[in-house]
Image (tube, rainbow, N blue to C red; front, side):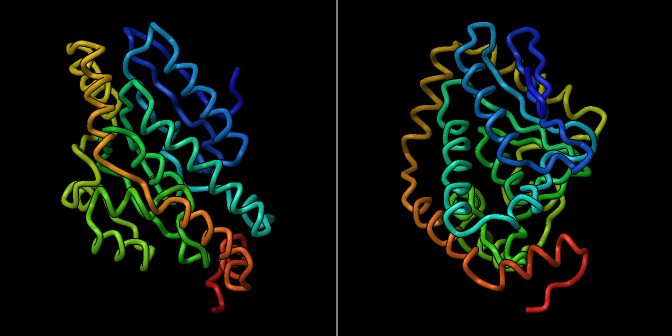
Length: 252
């Protein structure tokens, strides 16, 4: 049914694994489209009440597939940003709670995916970051918006301006993740958290999520899309992505 996802359902809990371990689970448009379809199907499935999102292998999602991004012009990049924002907005606003079990690298669009989930727990080996500026780009899937909302304006600016990666301990300190667990127990802990949620009334949990989300008004995502696309009109972005693909430092 899915080329790039693994989905398991047991005891009202669905586990969605991004399954491209050969590229550290970097996502391409095909994977994002599959993920969107899966989340809609799970939200409509009466046998599912909580969803866990994780990655197969040693990475959560290492970002967008740069080999695909490097071929985009400004218009295609703008469309890609809108597409990603649409999918992650659905994750954030869908009725059922979504837990991110971050088992490794959550970079770029992977960090953005984790932030769209309702609760984030992490492996001791997890790494987080929005390193797009190192490619001459900016986050394009509402990372500029959600990161600031979650960790505060100043820390979000530091992480996005520098492109620095942070480990699980720092992520917990700044409120990006709720809990840290050993890698071997991460998924079991995610299931345990899901079971705690299952103990509550399903309608009450659904309405609580909707009420909490109602307090946030997203005014910056459209602007992010515009400037993400604009980045692709600059020689800087071409050099940044080509340097990444050639495994060298960019010549700014």
